[in-house]
Length: 187
Image 1 (spheres, rainbow, N blue to C red):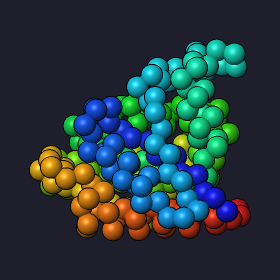
Image 2 (image 1 turned 120 degrees about the vertical axis):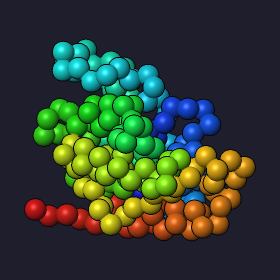
Image 3 (image 1 turned 90 degrees about the vertical axis):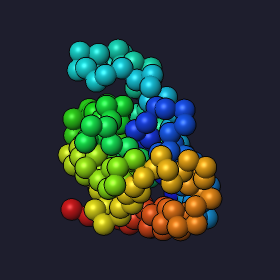
Image 4 (image 1 turned 30 degrees about the horizontal axis):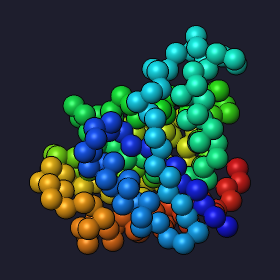
């Protein structure tokens, strides 16, 4: 079974280390898994119930929902902005949480990882992201974590895929998420 993992990156910066981490995850995906880094989060308007009605959903939000519906699992990459989740990632979660009770996360496995400049690697933002995506209907894999501190210096001259320690940890995260995507959950 081929597993499609949709990667959402919470940084829009061209040189984003979280973006590089997502690219590394795509390269390191095990056989039978495909990590697709979503393009276009910057184009999605802030969530507003007034425009989230059939026939009026903004095209960029509809595109995100389609990509999410086609995914078997999610890998979210969160930097830390002022101690919490970046707005672009929270906005994506908000759009994917609707329509209420039938959002795109729909019990699918979700892992949240990331890197940040601080000494803890963005754990506060990643914890907030886990909370939000869990409430939005995702099946958060709580023990699947990777927080890489000191991103600005660690990845100043090295892409995450070329950092042996990070590559090994990232490979394990993607492989375990792939395994969770194959599990059947019964309530």
